[in-house]
Length: 76
Image (cartoon, rainbow, N blue to C red):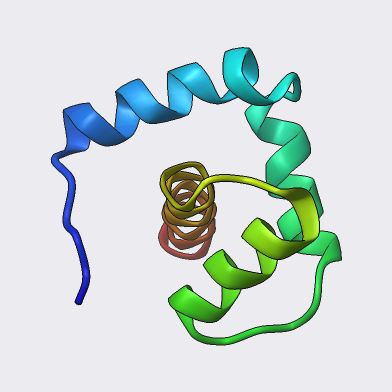
């Protein structure tokens, strides 16, 4: 089951990532880039949680942001 968040909820979560993890969002996005070549969203979330001891919400927000920025580069 997937939980969908509004854009505002996503923005709020992304804004809190540096405060709760001690790392900037750009650092997390680089970690995803440097991580394993996983295809599915939930696989990426699971990897990020396990490798970096993040909560499900934090990992999901980071992967969603990664996908948004990747799509913007591709179509922008």
